[in-house]
Image (cartoon, rainbow, N blue to C red; front, side, top):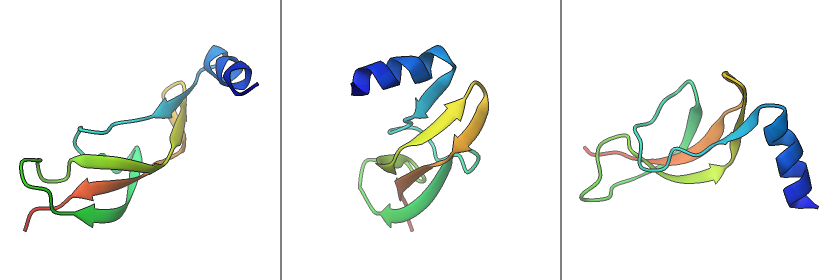
Length: 71
């Protein structure tokens, strides 16, 4: 049932926002938590806490994420 719903959403252009490992983009994501992880870049997305979605090229719900913050 979930895969059917997911396929229907994809058919109409709704795609999830998943940018783990990429630089934080405030247009696509909302940072809720920060962490300090050695070996990761500053403001790199570490984890998606709540999925976000786009309709074609428009954000309909930003992803809530945890990012890396280096002092």
